[in-house]
Figure 1 (cartoon, rainbow, N blue to C red):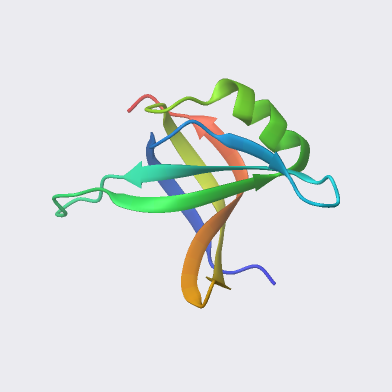
Figure 2: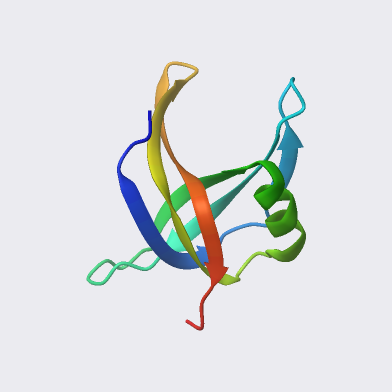
Amino acid sequence: MKGQEVTIYGRLGKNPELRRTKREKSFCTFTLAEQVEGEENPRWHNIVMWEKECEHWAKILRKGNPVIVRGHVVERVFKDRPYVEVNADAIGFTNS
């Protein structure tokens, strides 16, 4: 089930990491720093993109790139700790 839809403007905190599941499904992960008005430090988001789109973007995106990400919030538990990520539906470059 998809969570809340979000749109985030920010800069990549690291280069995307392209990986595959045990069933050979492609996915890439990266962090995105969103500068929120009124907050001194950026708000960090964990981003995941799946399948063919991720292979394309993993080749293009680099740390520091300003991008916009549209996706859905997913809450998980990993090693008994809550973990929130955004499953990206679309990514694009911004001028900021």
